[in-house]
Length: 254
Image (cartoon, rainbow, N blue to C red; front, side, top):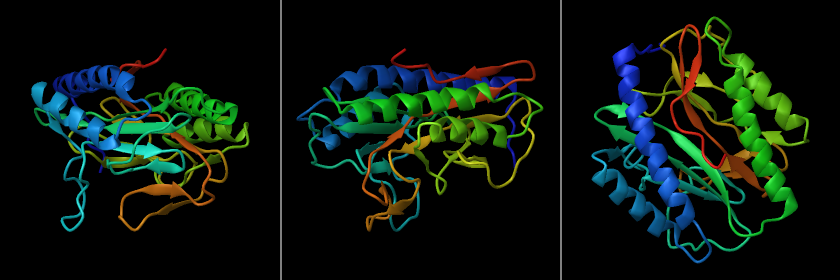
């Protein structure tokens, strides 16, 4: 069931999104060679607590295997849901960070992929095209139009470069919960409802250098490319109004 938000509720989600983007602006310079991903997660947890919020991802998921961090930190062939650990970032890595904040019951969601030092030309192009896919998808959001036009925009741009588009995981509604209806796929499949004012969604292209096929590791969380090639991930939380669309999380690295 679609959970449309009223103006006051969108205001609350917007404040959560502003806090999340402020956190990203501070954490991105800390994502560098030699840093353990667990250090970044601890930093994020402290930042969110000081901001008066709660990490939306920490403890999320099944009771027997909840996500153990505040930030999903996925490196190179890891697509999404990488678990923070003692692993150190190295020069040339692509590091994707995905985080959400619960601020007074309102949930935000955003992801970026950071290039560590001088990455390969293939890695840089993949990252830039994935970010372009995000904005192509956002540009396709209009009240009264169908949801899957977002997927068509994302897939068309990615495939024009020969990249694989992840089908198994996708964007989603957000605001009251971490994941709400509708699913927002990056390939055109599944339900295709009309978008309407009050809809708040997270659009998040996951684009692979090789095929779009992925696997989940034994930890039950980390999603990797099946062919072990690179992946990139960008995400914004977006609100739909009758006469316009608003990116609630602030654009980064423009």
